[in-house]
Amino acid sequence: MSEEPVVEAGTVIGREDVFVVLPPLASTFALPTREQLLALKAGDGVKLIFQDREGAAERMWVKLTELRDATQWHGVLDNDPVLLHLRAGEAVRFHPLAVIDTKPQPSSGLRQPGANGITPTTTTV
Image (cartoon, rainbow, N blue to C red):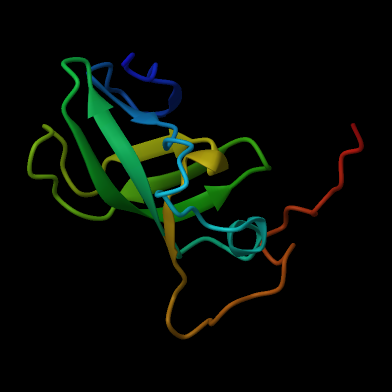
């Protein structure tokens, strides 16, 4: 059985020893829907998988600070990791498809797609 290749999907700003990876594409791993991702805005939480160069990995929450477009979001680490040498508050840049869970702000509720400034588009193949 071969090991899945690690695909880097983001970085911890100013760090070269830890990076964000894409989640596995497996039927046992539920991911947020397109609508859930499009409804997010600055201040909401997203969970990402972080991994170091030695292969240690950890899932952690990131508080969104900026959703530039459909390919690059920014946030800050919202919890202290157990395994990785990071600290809450470190800046993170990542691709939205790296998000494995969402936590909208309680007061805001679920927003309509496109509420984050990113206009949903349909691509015809």
